[in-house]
Length: 400
Image (cartoon, rainbow, N blue to C red; front, side, top):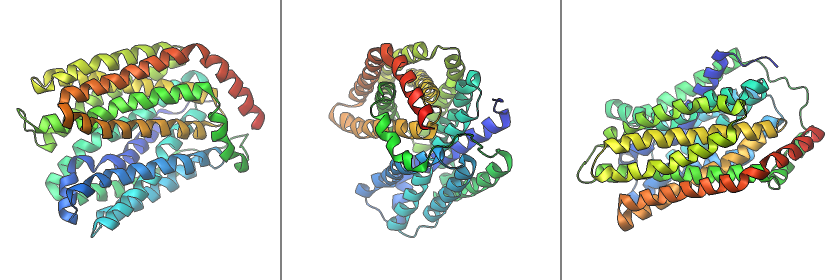
């Protein structure tokens, strides 16, 4: 199989970044949105939650379609519908319309997983991990970059400008995808009637469940940091404004982009080792982050290490799963990302509760606990992974 050209890898990374930004762009400017739409404090959390709930539904309902339809056309269609959701949000006259727009944008933002599956399926085996690393780096750029950009745009032209920009970018990308990416011409295409049964098969796969649990706890740790960091930074002694808090995302970007190399290491058969030391680094980042109340420099280092570790684990997990499930790449990535989403949600919910109870030190202890659970699961799951992988590979080949 020929390698995936550089410009196509970069295009897919941009698709991932813009799509996921639709889900996270509102986080740093919730007060501005709520004030404009007349929403009370209790409703602000739903401005983020409805997009994430839509995303979760899309993982189950939409992503498996990539195993039975042309992924290039599917990517373009989902980008166009994401643009519709962003436009509805940008023009919202009240909370109901904003919730509807954000739900639609979140639902079709799962184009991210279809883009990753497209990259994996069109990559030569020796380059699959490296290509996945490049493409998924766009996800972290989108999550963290959206915080910085939305804060800046809101300061210049108001919060609606962020969603207008996302609608325009998503529409333009839909056109570029059709022009640049080749058609997804697979010689073996599973029967669409078998697609629903794919999740049942995954539920019996120990490799999938193991990687899913590692992702669940890893992204619970990630969510603990990024959903709670504004609390200590906005309190004494720092009292930072949201736009300055968002700049800490730049340290996260540096770490996450550095981890794109993890895919190349996975191509050389080092995925289990990379996962192990990355999770150890994730755990080690939390004592630094816990020092936020007295110094910001340890926080910068902790954020950089945490995002490097999380992205490295994410890339190696997807490499192992797409290699094990070559005929169900969309389904397996969609199922895996359910664990990702649930873990992120758990971190977001529990970090605020921990902070209310005992401050940022408690939130840091919580994040470290999630990291320790991920490391423990990875060690327990490691010996049996290869057997299950080969078993499912034979099953997937037979079905195709």
